[in-house]
Amino acid sequence: MIGTANRGGSIDEGFEGCENVGARSGLRFLKPPRDRSSGRTLKSLIERGAAGAGVSPFSLGTWTCTAAVLAAAFALVVSPRVTHAADSEPATFTPLLDYAQEQSPPTMAYADSLRKRLANATAELERHPPPADNDCAHTLGAGRFGALFEDLGSIRAGLGDYSGAIDAYTRAVSCLPRVASLYANLASALLNVGRLTEAREAARHGLAIDSEQSSLDSVLAQIDFIEEHWADAVARLRAAATAETDDERATYWQCFLWLAQRRAGTRTPELAARKEYEEWPAHILDALKNDITEAELLGVIRKQEDEGRRREMLAEALYYMGQLRLANGDAATARRYFAATVNLKVLYFIEHHMALAEIAKARAATDQY
Image 1 (cartoon, rainbow, N blue to C red):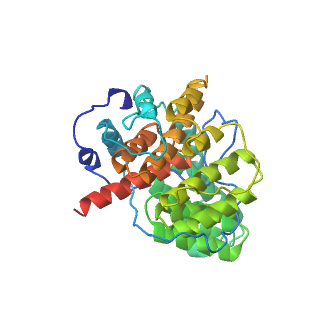
Image 2 (image 1 turned 90 degrees about the horizontal axis):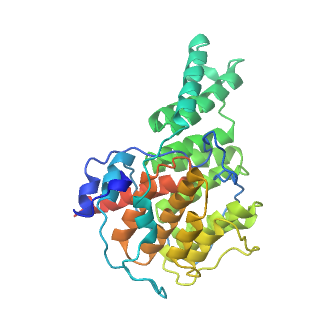
Image 3 (image 1 turned 180 degrees about the vertical axis):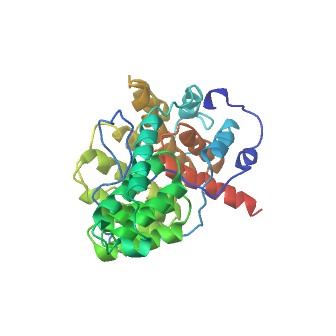
């Protein structure tokens, strides 16, 4: 648990027992009963990225680990040095990590509701068994079965059953093979178990059906970021930030765009041209740009009165600031930020999944030596 983290040991110990499993889909988030006021998800408008992002692509394989194993990694908190260009905070100053250690274990209050929905969906499929996958698309009930399997996939993903989610989305596609959004769901689920090649293939298949399906480009942007294909990531993210009509969602895209350029080696990234947004997550973007300190960012989070929303904001901040530390060359501290993100168990946010992927890449790199 975060609140009882041990500050001794080696970070490598936290990687023992890693499995090839993933995290919740970042496309169609299954919200807990207390709906988030912002409604932010990655189901946002995104246009195809323009060519020529001005950075060189670089690729790494990715894997994912169980949240429990990553919790062990976070428990090994030490304080290595970090070098921030133009950062006045001490190298060992990690206020977000310190605050994360104070948090109580997550309650996952929405799980009971999801289990009830799972029972209902399963019972419905038992009462009216679907035809074989090869026949489903040719039956009169194809639409109803496809919708049932889509709902079943979302529920299973919400409960952390990602293999089950992939199976359900695959069956939904077999019933409705011309519905592009289903390929987005399948691609996202595949991404979250580290099957990136299959995820990219599914997304491209969906785009061949509907080139305007923005959620498919959302998945591809995530894959490009995880695999460190920075030219493609920057292009897609810039297009997304430009096209997005919602200022809040656009600001999240701007955060990813800033980080993709920093990770590619650009010291002074360029954001998409649009008006500035003053509400959360603008504070994260300010911290990435070094306009405010991490301590000031934490101060904004502390002011949030709703405990659930405060936990969400903390998970987001930890992930993005972990990426900033990674861009600044401090991989060890970055891993702890990512592990802290995972430990908060905000499964329905993309930051959870992206943090899983980063720690899994670090573990894979460690295994090579």
